[in-house]
View 1 (cartoon, rainbow, N blue to C red):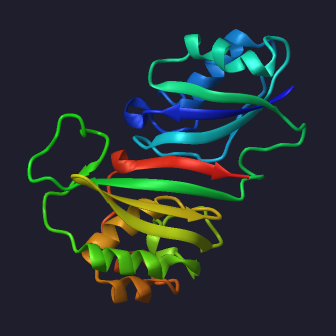
View 2 (tube, helix red, strand yellow):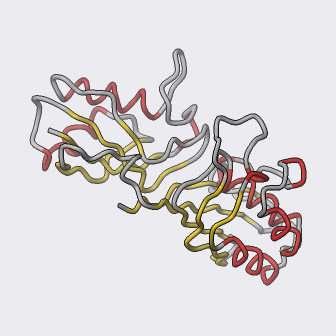
Length: 238
């Protein structure tokens, strides 16, 4: 049986998704839980290989399993043996060829900036505290410029395994939410650190500066990479 699992996790105490010897990772904890519930779980695939500190509200994993409960009861069986900062919020049987990463058509990320003059203990490791005025109109123009097909080479580390830097952004917008300002972006796929570097650069540069970077300019011309704890993988579209 192949399972499709929708995952929610607080990334604070994880060293990212991918299993690493001696480090606590989302994949490592999920695999340990799968091995306790199912007889022969295979290695899971995931739609978004989130970095250390990054959160998820709707990441998707696929895994082939044998034995254990039916798909309808998989979430109820897995959650008691998962740590408190990781949960399976939905589980269903998937077609035999379903692959969480390769079959994904788009992913949506949200980045949260806390802009109140004073910090909040409830926002620690949940947002980027940036207590200075932000030009919301300029940020909106910068986000609008991202929509479409562009070369995002400026928004990923220079040392990278990526060979193709062109991505198609389907939607991008900034929204105020009380004392927070949130950036939401949907694209066919993302480069490593792409969303965080877009956020840091939009905060620092005017819209025309963003436009100038979208034709494959070097990373050195873009701005700061925003910290990971403000980033959430919200949704995966299939």
